[in-house]
Length: 260
Image (cartoon, rainbow, N blue to C red; front, side, top):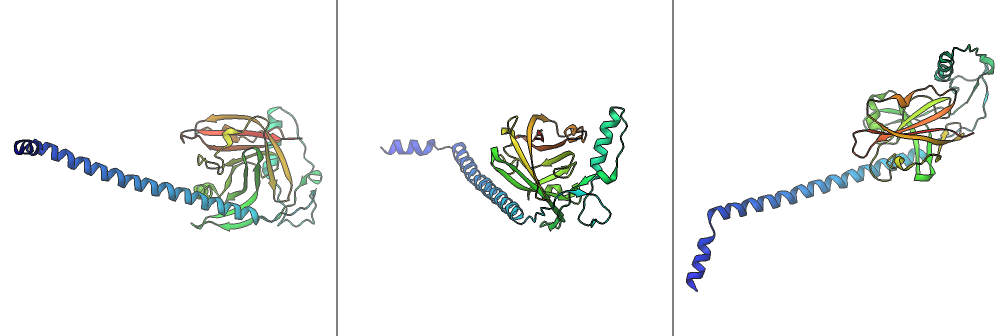
């Protein structure tokens, strides 16, 4: 019996001891990294939920002004009237492509009188405005649409809500381009890839007017492809939804046009 015990003890070589130490080190390192990754995932989810809460608070506090459309007259308060140059540019560009003559009678141009934009400040000091609301019933999306003073702070604003990236104002002629994060869950624009042709997207502007847009196309593009932001809409009202694909290497695009 003593000989067997001695033989087993002698069998534990320095090399085996070294491997045991390496195994223990790798085990504890794996546990440590797992704890770090778990903590990061928990914090990331907390941060997303916090962003969702901020977005919903903005949505609840939007001050809609249900003022009817009126003709543009000299006595209208210009502080609350927004005449979009882009609207005229879009029409002219399309007409020029067709070699048509276009005359614009300013007295017959109808403009929407809206409430003044609500100004807010993000945690990093970025200034942004609430310009409308987007609702997509089929995928349970309902968020305010916000816009920064420029695109420099869009990364910050994307953590708050859906952002205007380019184009026309909500429910105006042209192509309103909206971007939102893909968190690979149910938040923000994570589920727009599930939209089908014909699904309805509702856009509510600050006048309180809601217009329905029907999805007519969806596709994937490279990050540097911005053709989907074109404002040549043939005088129609369109919206473009933009988010990252699940691998973050490309962009998922959904196009929709006003339902009449």
